[in-house]
Structure formats: structure tokens, C-alpha cells
Image (cartoon, rainbow, N blue to C red; front, side, top):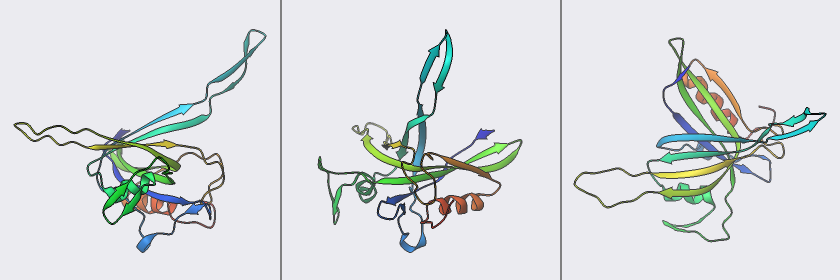
Length: 196
């Protein structure tokens, strides 16, 4: 299996009043427009209990993870939404009292398996954006593009959200077509009454 790209990074805010994802504007799941790259680094518990000189109990369960996205455009409206900043017309104000909302997030990864193209959906039902960084430098004799990075923490669900049980931290499925993969991802991020 070889991963050969990145498509359709989509997200939707969790509505804490309904324990579902928010109603969609125009029936469309929000999408990051231009993602340059993405990295995910999971953290697992590591607890071991030894008795009678041997391992008696162990726990290597998922604790949390770090999701990093490099985006081509640091869109003010999008970043204000992700970090819970105040947006007034075109002006963004960040304060120490801002509280970033939680989101569901997923993407589609094209890959080649035994010479056949497949599309894998990877979905994190609960993430919270924690920081944004950018690199800026003076223009020299040639143009260099700079980008912005946003980082989020991936958590397991502490309660059922959108039909997914508490404890869920990731879902994935692989499809033969991009359209089927996108339909599945859209369904995961759409307000749901039942199980997913």
C-alpha cells in the first residue's frame, strides 16, 4: 500500500447542546480549501504492573494525539472559527478568554494497492485546535512561498457524539471510488440521529 496524496480535509463543529455535529449551511460539509500536508502523531498510555518477577497487567490504550495541518491560506474567518476568536466584519480579535470549540475532522487519502487506486477515509470524531504558527521572511532575489500551520489535539469521545459511542477516537474505511469515500466522510460529519 502506497499513499499518493491527500484530498478533502473536512470538518464540522460539535454542537454541545445536541451532542451532534452542527447543522450544515447549504447542506455542505465545511472543507479546508488548500492543505499542503498533514501529520498525525498518536500518544498511547504505557502502564505496566509487575508481580512475581513478570508482567502481570499492562495498558497501552490511546491517550490523545497531535494533528498538524499546513495550509496555503491563513483565512481569517476560518482561523477565527477554529480558535474561538471574535470576528467583526474583517477584523479578528484574540483574547486570553477565547475558548476553541471542538470539531470532527476527516480526510481522504488516495493510495495504490496491488496496482489499483483506492481511497481511504480517516476520521477523528473529536479534535480541538490549539495553536497556529507561520514563517515569514523578507523577499529576496527570488520568490519563496510561506505557509501557515495549525495544530489540534485529538481526543477520544468522552460521551456519545453523533451516534458514535464514548471512547471512540478514530474511524476509517477504504473505498474503490473517490465519490463513495466522500459520501462516507460527509455522512460522518453530518448531524445524525442514529449510530454511524
